[in-house]
Length: 176
Image 1 (cartoon, rainbow, N blue to C red):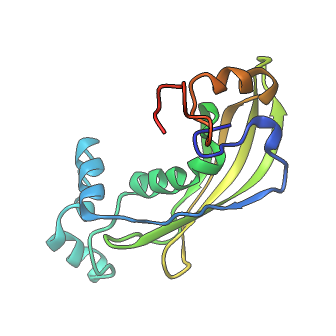
Image 2 (cartoon, one colour):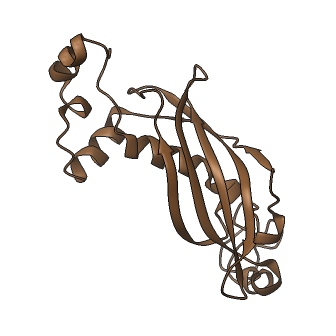
């Protein structure tokens, strides 16, 4: 069990859908930090005057960089998908059909596309499609993600030793 009830490999089924419970409002700081830390020099992400003139004023505000949008959408899916993940294996088919602006609130949902054994006995591979939408329901991110996730038979007992289970926090060093 993950910290907040994460899924093991055996819990995933092809066709399964998750509507992730949280939303996340993208702030100006989120966009600036990632854009400038990665040395992205596309001014539409951090220069208001430039963004206002871009494409004849097509965008009302600076654009949130796609990597920020993707990170937020994948992060929103983590409670349901990857608290028991061992590694991300890859992302494919990534698209940003609509822009994201400072102040937009993003939501995510996921469909499981494939569940298969890995080359190691303690984990399996899950491939899914994550879709991100803004507060108006417009799709702002779509991408497929493959990740390696723990198998219950191998990890569940080991996890109990260091992950707090509600009602069993005593004796694990996590407090009550």
